[in-house]
Amino acid sequence: MISLSYLLRFLEEDSPFGDVTSEAIIPEGTKAKAVIIAKQNGVIAGVEEAKALFEHFGVEVEVRKRDGEEVKKGDIILELTGDARAILLVERTALNVMGRMSGIATEVRRLVDRVRAVNLKVCIAGTRKTLLKPLDKRAILIGGGEMHRFSLSDAVLIKDNHLALVPLEEAIRRAKGFSVYKVVEVEVESLEDAIKAAKAGADVVMLDNMSPTEIAETIEALKREGLRERVKIEVSGGITPENIEEYAELDIDVISLGYLTHSVRNFDVSLEIIGKA
Image 1 (tube, helix red, strand yellow):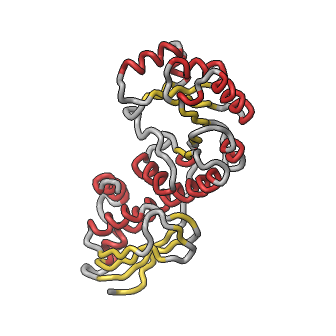
Image 2 (cartoon, rainbow, N blue to C red; image 1 turned 120 degrees about the vertical axis):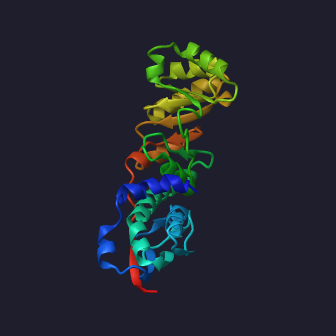
Image 3 (cartoon, rainbow, N blue to C red; image 1 turned 180 degrees about the vertical axis):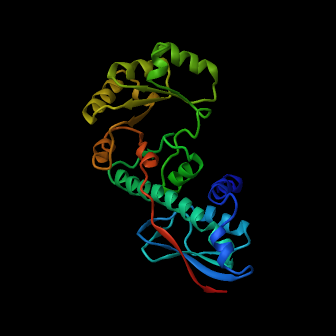
C-alpha cells in the first residue's frame, strides 16, 4: 500500500481549513453508514488506500472487494460506519484515488489479456509519463503489468537526448562501468543502432517508434548476428489498443505505453450515505 503520509497530502489540499459545508450543517457527533459502489465494470484498485484514509479518521471499514478483483456495475466495494463529518471529509479524495487507480488497472488488465492471447511471454509496462507515480505504478501492478522504471535512480535508460551528446557505444561503456547493479537500456530507432547497442553490451534494447515490419527485420538481424538472446527487446511509441496485437505477435519481451498513465480514463465509483448509524 502507498504510504498514508503521501495520501494525506491530497486530503490536505482538498480541505486546507476543514469541510465547511459539513461543519455548518451536520451536528457534531452524528454517526452514519455509507457504501462505495462501482458504477461500471472493471478492475478495482485503490481499495487499500481508501481504507487507510477512512480509518485514519476513525471510520470503520469493511472491504467487500479487494484490489485486483473484477467488479460489476452496482457492486459494493467498501462499507463505512462512523462519524458523518469524517466520511464526507474523506469522500472525494478516496474516490479520486480509487477512480484513477481503477481506471489504470482496468486498462492494463484489458491489454494484458489481449497480449497474452497472442504471446504469453510479452509483458505490458507503464512509463514515467505521470506526476502521480506512487498511485499509477501501483495501479499498473494491480492490473497485471510491469512498472518499468519508478524513477531516474532505478536503472539506466539511454535516450536520444543522451546520444545527441555522447556516441552510442561510448554511452553504453560508461553506463556499464558506472555500476554493475544497474540494468542498462538503450533507446534506438534503427536496425543498425539496435545491433550496435547489443554488441556494446546493452541489457535491454528499446525499439522506439518502429513499425511491426521494421521490428521484425531488426529482430531477424539480431538473430543472424547471434545477439538476440543477449538482450531483452522492448518496443514503444505508436502502439495503441487498436494495433497492440500486431506488436505482440513479434519475438519481443516488453511493450511499454505512456498512455496508460498520461491519458487514463477515470473509473466511475461513488459514495452513498445510506442512513444514520
